[in-house]
Image 1: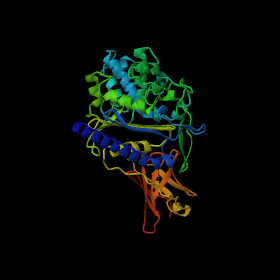
Image 2: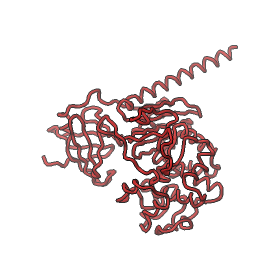
Image 3: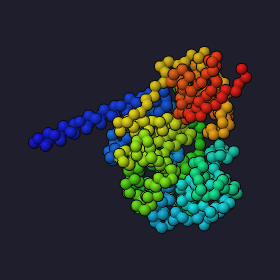
Amino acid sequence: MAGVAILSVSTSVAMAQSKSTAAAIDAYLQPYVRGNNLSGEVLVEKKGKVVFEKSYGLANREQRIPNTPATRFHIASMSMQFTAAAVLRLVDMGSLKLGDHVGNLVSGIPDVDRITIRDLLTERSGLPDINGLPDYEDILQHHQTPATLIAKIEGQPLLFPPGTKFLHEEHSAYNLLALIVEKKTGLSFAAAVDRLVFRPLSLTGSGVDDDSVGDAAPMAKGYEPAGTYELKPAPLIHWSAKTGNASAFTTARDEARWVEALFHGRLLRASTLDAVLDTSMSVGYGWFKSQNQRFGETAYYMNGRAPGFASFVLYLPQSHTTVVALSNIYSSATTTIGYDIGALSLGLPYQPFHPRDSAPSSEELKTCTGTFQFGPDFYQPNAKLMLIAKGQELSLRWPSGSVSWLISVEPDHFVDRTYWEQVRIGRDPEERAATLVYGHFQGAETSPK
């Protein structure tokens, strides 16, 4: 009987700790929710058991439809995990080899015979990026197929010798992988991924949007920041224009189930899974992989952002912890949220988000304005960014004309609402805005005094 009593006490303590952690996670998320910077589903799983799951905000603001665990979200670049898995399933079946040269499967791209399947999966192909084409916004406004997407880069030379380096996210590489999957299966890419990945794992809330999904419920509608606090509907796009690299949708529960199945060998052969787990390359197979100092172990993670949506997934194998954050707001806050919740659930330090209790005055914001020159290593090389004050709102205008709204944290300290970067104003001896620190980059004020 004593042993039973001890077991009962231990179980009660564990339940109390779990409830305490869940309450702390919910409290952490509330400032994001109140400021319209998170609307979606957040889930934490440890050792295969859900320790936190909660829905926030509205799947459709106009119809007042709430987000629920069944709500499906477009997941942008996290889609590459499923594309890679479909390809690796074909490897396991003997239809493909990682070392196969792409020139034997497609044509029309210079030096394509030098690119291997492995190069595409690890984003080291050297293919020119479709997202950087001048007419990319127009491409998003029309139905596409993997073949039409690859046709957009036909005839363009490679940016570097295949397999030699990772330059940036290779959207075209995953468009090409989608085309190869179609050629090898004889199915549309959406049907092939369903047969190879979603159906075997019973991921019934997941799919690939090839523009035929329609109004299937429950699917979240996407929104984007409008000013410092409000939201507006995001521009509509044809998700088929992102086939392979950002066209998938899923639920938080399906994503957690997928992570559990992938990393515990329930989808791929051990030798194939080894390629995904390999940390000698920091990017590959739809994952970033690195030794993370914050968690003291290897972290596998991926984030995504596309019109109206943002997503993040983190898997920590040593502590067997999965964090999923899906949102139908175009804001990279999900990445910060995911890391912080991972730390919170493991009893590690994290930084709560505390916006100012009251909006700064228009007079204060006027002293922050100016044009700031950044260097060649900035996200947009040699960019000039403009800080503009209008009433009690401060915005950042990019060279492309896009606008980021800034949330005030304290005087001269803001957060970019779209990219969720820290923004700080440095002042000269006359208290004029002299520098703009954006993340870890610094720009100098260039306006005439």
